Structures are given as structure tokens and as C-alpha cells.
Image 1 (tube, rainbow, N blue to C red):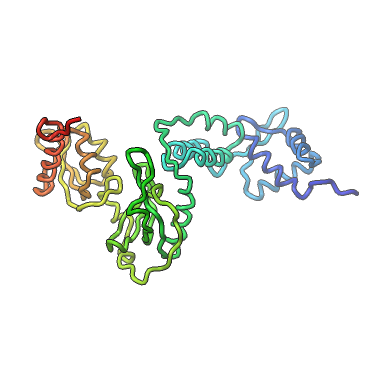
Image 2 (cartoon, one colour):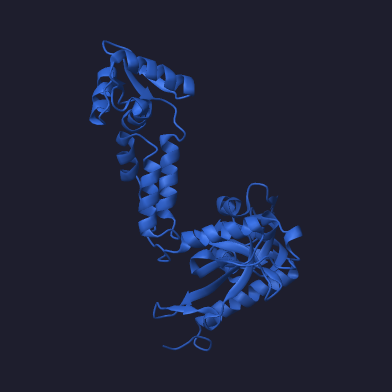
Length: 334
């Protein structure tokens, strides 16, 4: 009996057809499967399709069956559910550190994990509140190099830049090559950061990955005094937008309606005490930085620092700077 073309690939194509074209609302009959296989140049008989479906189930594929005048089949449980794929696609679309081109590529790969009927719905349901995207197309190369360095406990070398008021790229320190030993990558406030030991200052420093350029793998440093005691959780505790600064155990009082914002910022385990005036107070470690003051002052008179004395004094100084900025004596005239 002559061999039928494509039989070695039949089971794989059958699985592909079911994955891409079937779901609970769009099951496929045996005739549908035979017709679709024929489009791939593979001839099949009903009996062999039944046998192949049994093999797929034995392999672990979750096959749903719709019984009726015609029995139809579909892929049931998948690696990712539709809500999970929607969540991943929305996260990619809204992330500003991912370029527009790469966002489109990643969303295409994510939606390919669903059936073709569902993929279009996922794309249509992605709404962006913030369409600002970084233009550093080398960010994925940077991330790859940084991951390699973390695994090998080696340094990375790179140039670091910022932007001028003319929106032009300007390298820090005149384009001098930076050397740092990455410990971890951290996503915070919609930016991606490399947490690294920076020998120049003998300290742990945060670098924005989208501001790094010409990242290359360096050598393992002879001395790395911080690695043994480094923990991401400890390093990031109290940070606001990855800004460094002095760490203090702060006591801050808030109006009752701000409980949601406080729990979002400090977590549900933060220590809370009720105040006599109906307000509540929290005690938490904070890194005193411009980002911290920006977060606190957004609440206006509904939040106030109550301890320690040093932080109360610093709050007063920051508030005075803002006040001076808008007074005739302290303000800058246009």
C-alpha cells in the first residue's frame, strides 16, 4: 500500500488546528478536521482521526466534546486562560518601557496562545490610559546582558544618558563608561531598574535600564562587599520610585479616606494606630527622597508627618521650599 504524504506530521498539525481554531464556542467536527488537514496537504480518514484524538488525550491535551447530531471537539483547558492572556497583553501594552514595536510583537505572541476567535477579542479589549513609550529599542539586549551578568556574578559596562530640555540625548559624565555589578532587575512605577553594586561610590545603586546604552558583559570583580548581605526586599523597602536617600522610621498621620492609598503604598501588614481626631497613623521605614515628598504632599492637608522630630523638621523645610517657590520674594520671575 503506497504511503500517504504528510502522515508523520498529521498528529502535530491536528493539534495545531485544534489549538488555533477551536474553543468552547467554536468546536470542530471530524469532517472539519479532515478538511483542514487537507489544506495542509495531509489526507486522513475518520478512523485515523479518532485514533489521533485519543493519542492527544493520552499525551495530556484537554479535549472537550460537544455531543449532538454531529460530535465536535475543542481544546478545553489551556496553559493560560483568556482573562490571564488579557491581563498579560494589557500589562505589555501599558508598560512605557517597552517600545511600541516590541509591544505589538509581544502582544501578537501572547494572543497566539488563544484560539483565533479569542485573539481578536483580546486585542480589541486592550485600552491604554498612558500611551507614552520609551524609544530605546536596545532595552531587550540590555536586559539579556544584565541577566547573563547576574547569573555569572560578573560586571556590566555601559553608557548612561538623560535628556536635555531640547529632548536630545546627553550622556552622563561626557560618555564615560560605567562599570557596575548587577544584583537584580526590578520593575517599579512603570520603569525597569538594574539594582547593582557601583564600585565608584562603593554602594548599591539603581540604574534605569532604558537609560543604559552599549551594555556589555564585563569581568567578575575581585571584591564585591555587598553581595553576601544583599536582599531585594530589604533594599527596596521604603523606596519611592527607586530613589535613594536616608532611611528613617516614619510616623505619618492620615485622614480616614486615605486608608486605601496607604495600604496600596505600604501593604496590608503596615502598623496602624487610631488617632483621637478620627485620623489614623502608620509607622513604616521610608527612604527620604524627592519622590517620597511628592507622594506625601499629593494629599495636601490630609496627611502630616508626626515623627521622628528629624523627619518633621525635614517636612517643614520641604514645605517652605514649595511655599517660597510661589511667593514674590522666593519665586522665579519669567
